[in-house]
Image 1 (cartoon, one colour):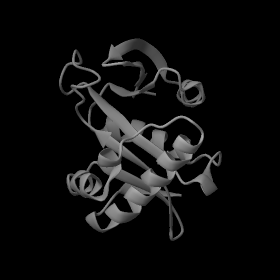
Image 2 (cartoon, helix red, strand yellow):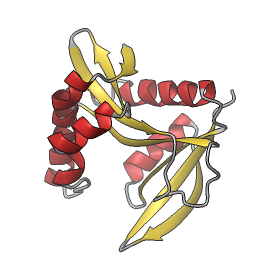
Image 3 (cartoon, helix red, strand yellow):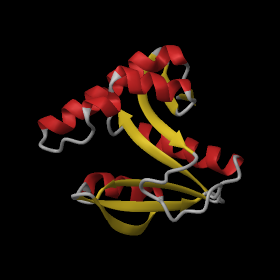
Image 4 (spheres, helix red, strand yellow):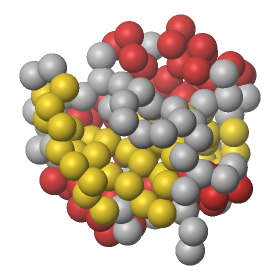
Length: 162
């Protein structure tokens, strides 16, 4: 599997992966991202900013994630420059449960370490037990559960030093 920073030309396919994941979640009664969050314009903007990273198996884009160096929305108390953050982790349904998430998270941890960040952090809706199990199985530790608006979010962190 090859994981790399996405190119601007990858933006339509990244949006497609995110939309596929969002549709699957919604069909199972667990809607997550708004159309604006994963729409072509926003994905192009984020991809142009170097935020999306993609996993490919041969010619197929099998997973994506957004990798950020700051997250004042979910982690307002975090000191700047100390952490990296994963958002919008999505895997094509045909590649679910085949280790793509683990590969992307390993890549994110290594990238954060190379950038001198002590922690890799992420969040998820607190009632998403399957996702929480994935993160905990990878080694993330629950930092806290916070209320933002009408939703509760579980915030996780992982030291980047191994």
